[in-house]
Image 1 (cartoon, rainbow, N blue to C red):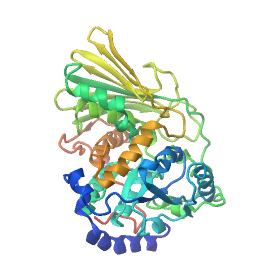
Image 2: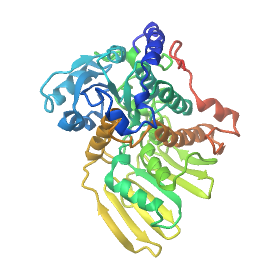
Image 3: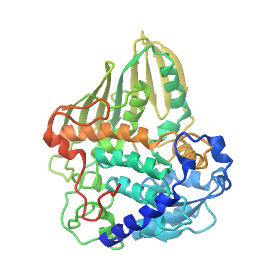
Image 4: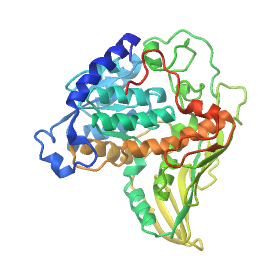
Length: 450
């Protein structure tokens, strides 16, 4: 992650090692009982966290929980102040000191590390994950799992080749209330589910315009850029605003937040890949500020079987159109379900409330930062998945499908076109310009080697 020579060395050195050490024990299809019989399968896990920004709060509880039986060996970030702050915060939860590290390479090349939590910026999610998998590590990767459609496919290929657990951080998959109502939907509680409306409303403020600036003290700018093509530093890029400063690092609000609700919608409707994507999106607020992509999007995804998912994303308009800041409404032939991080409401076809379940979770909603009971359960599910004690709530195969919807919406916006897709894999069929955005350009030496 530090230099091109480092990246090449890691790819070459670890590809052979990981292939030799790839364990049949973690492949899908091997039962939990079979795995538990393996000597050492239930030993303590050594963990490293890569990326110590706003998602850090999601990891305190699951790592500190006695039942997790893990040891936090590394806190890794390209900004020195982030490492120091993270150490101070974790000191309230654990009674030992993890090693503070700048380079992901040192973490993933440590043979004592069993798994990493990848909470880096979006352009690092897939490369950081496949580097770790090549080095024999299991990975919990935050959403979105990829920066572009091809990277989602690559992660599935890496998982299959190296037989390591990869879980995406779409934590609502671990919500007991969501699991309950989605099962009921699948069992016909609202008849045939045919449409889902996913939404997000947030009052994000004006963003500073990019200007060339000196690299902030303590920031490894080379390391931050990693697989992305090199450019000069611009003010405030490293601290969250990379989300809105073009497409080199971020995936806009759709990749940032639609990932969660579109995943719930796809889960409820039991659909995989769309055959058509239609988008209406624009930048509507503070037209002269540094926000470089849309801040408002309506997207429609059409699937076979006459099923539709719609996305209503308002990044800088906090009006709660549907009664909450984020959530998903699922429509069926015999009723409707409203589900969010606070629970669900089940209505019959005439609109009468039939059942109301309020979640006991304190999971963060539209506020910056993260953490809560759902995240805790989701990370612990990852730990249990490594040991073979539980099925993964969000295996990478499912995570990549949901994230693909976000990428397709972004591509439709960037090319100002309707996309016609192959319903068997989501590939774009009708637009050459759009097809070129299926992947991205990497800094030389950072290309995937699978």
